[in-house]
Length: 322
Image (tube, rainbow, N blue to C red; front, side, top):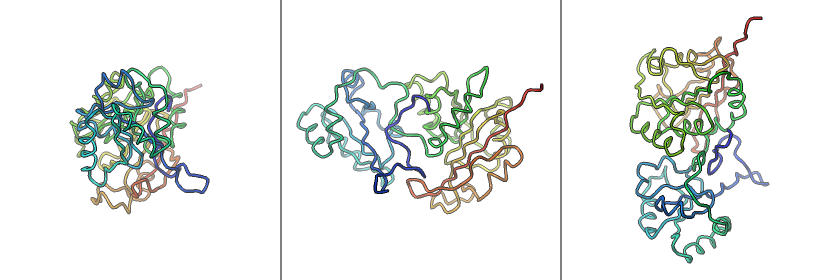
């Protein structure tokens, strides 16, 4: 997806492997928790800045927990180590906290991992985090659909390509699409999560392409009402969200040539347990039969061991009369 970069590829069916066939260990990523001024004065290449005072509101920007995380801190190392140690099991990162002000601390971290030593040996970069740089990666289905997304966008004529992210949460998928040039609408029932998305869009310099829509979907018709009766989108992304009453409306919101990516919990998942939130076999293919062409319909186990749908479908491109 263009220039969008992330700390590590998303785990999924096509996880990179070593020569022995074992999953390759993700490369470490660097979080710099010093002040913005200290970060801009000099930081490790590819480092991502979240001042420690902001971490509570920006935890959603951290990488997957299987990605080694190097934290460049000031003299508050003990407090930061303590915070990471108190996370729940689902949010326990592989963390090494380094005191940037201490050559001995940097050397000790480099001695434990040669990749860390290589990072610290590189020439420092200056200035803020570049637009399009993130610690979190594309979700597996988005990552595996990048070529198709580029093709869909190239088919759009006379306007900017539009994407809708349903159940966007804090907007990680939405912001990755916006950073890649899409005009994005992020829809969710959680106003605080949408505020986090809007804040990230501001920091990334793409707020003009991002719209947050707060809506609680209950009945059929609620989705179209939330985004507008005349709205159409070239991509609709649904990740870890499932709402049957408004499912049929998704097809109506796709523009000619539009793409649907549906990546949610499938039968056999341990969580959620509410049947209303779990996709049933063939449910999507049956719902969109006759209106969309199914390009992919399978269930794969993702990094946390749960089965997720990998469903891709597209509306036919309108053909102009001769």
